[in-house]
Length: 66
Image 1 (cartoon, helix red, strand yellow):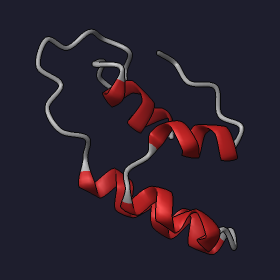
Image 2: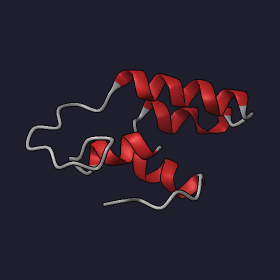
Image 3: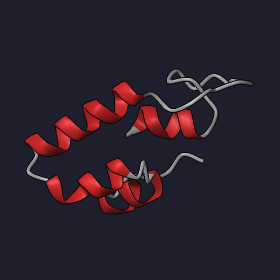
Image 4: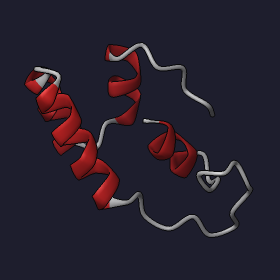
């Protein structure tokens, strides 16, 4: 979640600013899907499919870094 939030905010995973962050990594989304599956949270798959980071942050109680 932290890596996706950093990408969404236009920063690299180390927190550095990026003028061209590019698309959010599909590898990170795939890893998140696997992690949530192992946690028994397949109910959140719809938000991964939609790449709905706001809803995932809310449901997982992750503070958005924006």
